[in-house]
Length: 81
Image (cartoon, rainbow, N blue to C red; front, top):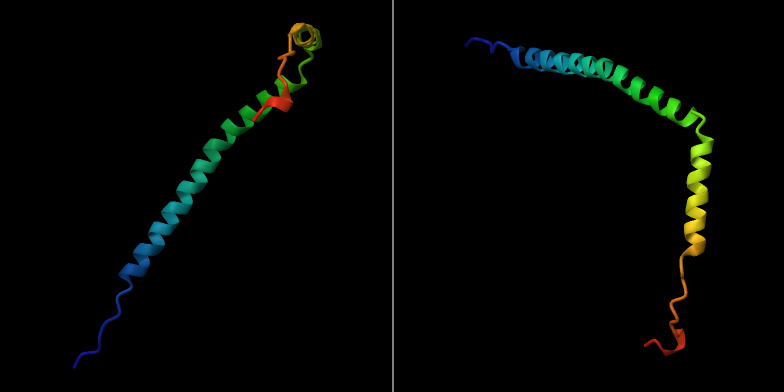
């Protein structure tokens, strides 16, 4: 009887697939890094830009609108069932 030959083909194939997946993940991480950095930098620039005059005017108009809104609904809470 001949001894059975051990085949490592499945193990080698698994290792090759894992290496390909790792390299693909590294490629995607590197390519997305520049997009993420651009997004973060643009958000920082938007938040740090001084635009207080426009914001103050918008807040004043909202405050006037809130003060002029009639909130009296004339509902008798005691008679609600």
